[in-house]
Length: 184
Image (tube, rainbow, N blue to C red; front, top):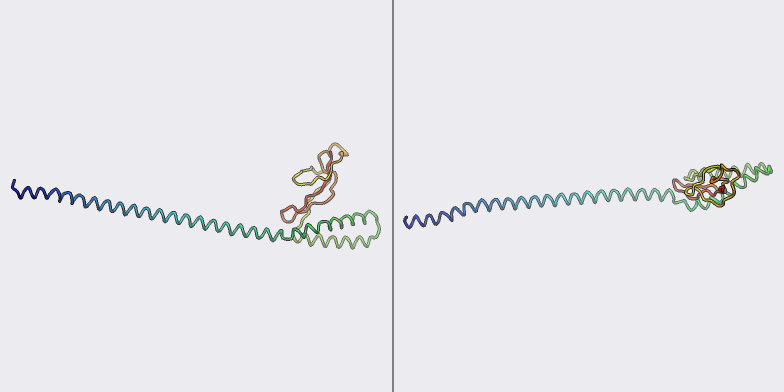
């Protein structure tokens, strides 16, 4: 081989190396670009997910505050209602006494009229009676036992003998439990 052939052969491997190296570099650059693109897509997806979660959380916050505000308006008059309950009790006692005494029937009609007007007004504002009757089963979650007495009959053991004060609810919230006497 001549000297020039040796030089060409010596140059040929370098040319072959650069020829094969260039596609490898291009492939690596393409892989790098693809991985960067994939990373950017993943970051975009993460940010979209964060945004959607934050948006949903904000919507839940708005719903919760609206519900709390509505509950506050419903029970804002709770203190006034609780202050009125003893007055209702006094009216009921007066009506019972007037009916028993058969005295002053005209006075009884006036007291009954005032009582009914007061109760109707409070019911329009959301107050409702908790219905409890003699013979109902006592439940500590729904009634307040004031005292226990010996049951007049065996079937009244553990049951309500007498209702001393009615219970009331304002909306769905109990503001006073019925005060009862239970049989032992």
